[in-house]
Length: 187
Image 1 (spheres, rainbow, N blue to C red):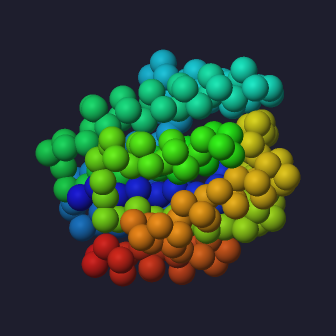
Image 2 (tube, rainbow, N blue to C red):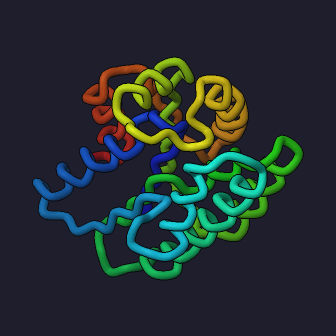
Protein backbone atom coordinates (compact mmCIF):
# COMPACT_ATOMS: atom_id res chain seq x y z
CA UNK A 1 0.00 0.00 0.00
CA UNK A 2 1.31 3.42 -0.97
CA UNK A 3 0.60 6.24 1.52
CA UNK A 4 1.42 9.95 1.23
CA UNK A 5 1.50 12.66 3.90
CA UNK A 6 1.66 16.21 2.59
CA UNK A 7 1.04 19.74 3.83
CA UNK A 8 2.73 22.98 4.83
CA UNK A 9 6.10 23.01 6.52
CA UNK A 10 5.31 22.54 10.21
CA UNK A 11 2.00 20.78 9.52
CA UNK A 12 2.93 17.52 11.23
CA UNK A 13 3.55 15.35 8.16
CA UNK A 14 6.63 13.66 9.59
CA UNK A 15 4.98 13.25 12.99
CA UNK A 16 2.03 11.41 11.45
CA UNK A 17 4.31 9.24 9.31
CA UNK A 18 6.38 8.32 12.37
CA UNK A 19 3.24 7.50 14.38
CA UNK A 20 2.08 5.30 11.52
CA UNK A 21 5.43 3.51 11.33
CA UNK A 22 5.36 2.83 15.08
CA UNK A 23 1.84 1.44 14.74
CA UNK A 24 2.88 -0.74 11.80
CA UNK A 25 5.80 -2.05 13.87
CA UNK A 26 3.32 -3.07 16.58
CA UNK A 27 1.27 -4.90 13.94
CA UNK A 28 4.41 -6.58 12.52
CA UNK A 29 3.88 -4.96 9.12
CA UNK A 30 6.83 -4.10 6.92
CA UNK A 31 7.28 -0.62 5.49
CA UNK A 32 9.61 1.84 3.83
CA UNK A 33 9.48 5.49 4.94
CA UNK A 34 10.79 8.20 2.60
CA UNK A 35 10.90 11.83 3.67
CA UNK A 36 11.62 14.54 1.10
CA UNK A 37 13.99 16.17 0.81
CA UNK A 38 16.00 13.13 1.90
CA UNK A 39 19.39 13.36 3.54
CA UNK A 40 20.62 10.03 2.16
CA UNK A 41 21.29 11.11 -1.42
CA UNK A 42 22.82 13.88 -3.52
CA UNK A 43 19.49 15.29 -4.75
CA UNK A 44 17.87 15.53 -1.33
CA UNK A 45 20.93 17.04 0.33
CA UNK A 46 21.20 19.67 -2.40
CA UNK A 47 17.49 20.46 -2.21
CA UNK A 48 17.78 21.04 1.53
CA UNK A 49 20.92 23.15 1.03
CA UNK A 50 19.15 25.43 -1.46
CA UNK A 51 16.07 25.66 0.77
CA UNK A 52 18.25 27.37 3.36
CA UNK A 53 19.21 30.10 0.85
CA UNK A 54 17.19 33.00 -0.53
CA UNK A 55 16.48 34.22 -4.05
CA UNK A 56 15.04 32.97 -7.32
CA UNK A 57 18.08 30.91 -8.32
CA UNK A 58 18.00 29.09 -4.97
CA UNK A 59 14.24 28.57 -5.41
CA UNK A 60 14.73 26.99 -8.85
CA UNK A 61 17.55 24.73 -7.68
CA UNK A 62 15.68 23.70 -4.51
CA UNK A 63 12.65 22.75 -6.65
CA UNK A 64 14.72 20.89 -9.24
CA UNK A 65 16.66 18.86 -6.67
CA UNK A 66 13.42 18.17 -4.74
CA UNK A 67 11.81 16.80 -7.89
CA UNK A 68 14.82 14.58 -8.61
CA UNK A 69 14.82 13.37 -4.99
CA UNK A 70 11.15 12.34 -5.21
CA UNK A 71 11.66 10.64 -8.58
CA UNK A 72 14.65 8.78 -7.13
CA UNK A 73 12.49 7.54 -4.24
CA UNK A 74 9.77 6.42 -6.65
CA UNK A 75 12.26 4.48 -8.75
CA UNK A 76 14.00 2.86 -5.78
CA UNK A 77 11.16 2.26 -3.33
CA UNK A 78 7.72 2.24 -4.96
CA UNK A 79 6.78 -1.37 -5.63
CA UNK A 80 9.20 -2.73 -3.00
CA UNK A 81 8.08 -6.06 -1.52
CA UNK A 82 6.84 -4.47 1.73
CA UNK A 83 3.37 -3.99 3.16
CA UNK A 84 3.54 -0.17 3.09
CA UNK A 85 5.52 2.49 1.25
CA UNK A 86 5.12 5.85 3.00
CA UNK A 87 6.17 9.18 1.49
CA UNK A 88 6.37 12.44 3.40
CA UNK A 89 5.98 15.14 0.73
CA UNK A 90 5.04 14.11 -2.75
CA UNK A 91 2.88 15.96 -5.27
CA UNK A 92 2.16 19.06 -3.24
CA UNK A 93 5.74 20.18 -3.71
CA UNK A 94 4.42 21.71 -6.93
CA UNK A 95 2.68 24.39 -4.81
CA UNK A 96 6.11 25.91 -4.26
CA UNK A 97 6.34 26.68 -7.98
CA UNK A 98 5.34 30.15 -9.24
CA UNK A 99 1.61 30.93 -9.31
CA UNK A 100 1.34 30.49 -13.08
CA UNK A 101 2.96 27.03 -13.04
CA UNK A 102 1.97 25.15 -9.91
CA UNK A 103 -1.34 23.62 -11.13
CA UNK A 104 0.20 22.72 -14.49
CA UNK A 105 3.05 21.08 -12.60
CA UNK A 106 0.63 19.27 -10.30
CA UNK A 107 -1.48 17.90 -13.15
CA UNK A 108 1.61 16.82 -15.10
CA UNK A 109 3.19 15.00 -12.16
CA UNK A 110 -0.16 13.53 -11.07
CA UNK A 111 -0.36 11.95 -14.53
CA UNK A 112 3.28 10.83 -14.48
CA UNK A 113 3.88 9.38 -10.98
CA UNK A 114 2.30 6.43 -9.14
CA UNK A 115 -1.13 7.10 -7.68
CA UNK A 116 -2.35 6.42 -4.16
CA UNK A 117 -5.84 6.27 -2.74
CA UNK A 118 -4.31 7.28 0.60
CA UNK A 119 -2.93 10.77 0.07
CA UNK A 120 -3.35 12.76 3.27
CA UNK A 121 -3.23 16.55 3.25
CA UNK A 122 -2.67 17.79 6.79
CA UNK A 123 -4.37 21.18 6.65
CA UNK A 124 -2.62 23.23 9.29
CA UNK A 125 -3.25 26.96 9.48
CA UNK A 126 -0.25 29.07 8.48
CA UNK A 127 -0.18 30.66 11.96
CA UNK A 128 -0.04 27.26 13.69
CA UNK A 129 2.58 25.94 11.26
CA UNK A 130 4.68 29.07 11.76
CA UNK A 131 4.47 28.73 15.54
CA UNK A 132 5.64 25.09 15.32
CA UNK A 133 8.51 26.05 13.02
CA UNK A 134 9.59 28.86 15.35
CA UNK A 135 9.62 26.53 18.36
CA UNK A 136 11.25 23.51 16.65
CA UNK A 137 13.82 24.73 14.12
CA UNK A 138 17.15 26.42 14.47
CA UNK A 139 17.50 27.17 10.74
CA UNK A 140 14.51 28.30 8.72
CA UNK A 141 14.04 27.42 5.08
CA UNK A 142 13.11 29.93 2.39
CA UNK A 143 9.36 29.19 2.58
CA UNK A 144 8.99 29.24 6.37
CA UNK A 145 8.07 32.87 7.05
CA UNK A 146 4.43 33.48 7.99
CA UNK A 147 3.88 35.50 4.80
CA UNK A 148 5.21 32.71 2.57
CA UNK A 149 3.33 30.02 4.51
CA UNK A 150 0.09 31.96 3.90
CA UNK A 151 0.76 32.15 0.14
CA UNK A 152 1.69 28.47 -0.11
CA UNK A 153 -1.33 27.46 2.01
CA UNK A 154 -3.70 29.01 -0.54
CA UNK A 155 -2.15 26.91 -3.30
CA UNK A 156 -2.10 23.77 -1.18
CA UNK A 157 -5.77 24.04 -0.26
CA UNK A 158 -6.63 24.47 -3.93
CA UNK A 159 -4.75 21.26 -4.74
CA UNK A 160 -6.25 19.47 -1.71
CA UNK A 161 -9.73 20.30 -2.99
CA UNK A 162 -9.22 17.70 -5.69
CA UNK A 163 -10.91 14.33 -5.08
CA UNK A 164 -7.70 12.33 -4.64
CA UNK A 165 -6.86 14.00 -1.31
CA UNK A 166 -7.99 13.07 2.21
CA UNK A 167 -7.99 16.35 4.14
CA UNK A 168 -7.21 16.25 7.87
CA UNK A 169 -7.48 19.18 10.29
CA UNK A 170 -3.84 19.76 11.19
CA UNK A 171 -4.64 22.17 14.01
CA UNK A 172 -5.97 19.26 16.11
CA UNK A 173 -3.77 17.38 18.60
CA UNK A 174 -1.52 14.87 16.81
CA UNK A 175 -3.27 11.91 18.51
CA UNK A 176 -6.65 12.95 17.05
CA UNK A 177 -5.15 13.32 13.59
CA UNK A 178 -3.56 9.90 13.86
CA UNK A 179 -6.89 8.31 14.82
CA UNK A 180 -8.32 9.70 11.57
CA UNK A 181 -5.33 8.29 9.65
CA UNK A 182 -5.83 4.84 11.18
CA UNK A 183 -9.55 4.97 10.43
CA UNK A 184 -8.95 5.91 6.79
CA UNK A 185 -6.41 3.07 6.45
CA UNK A 186 -8.66 0.60 8.33
CA UNK A 187 -5.90 -0.10 10.88
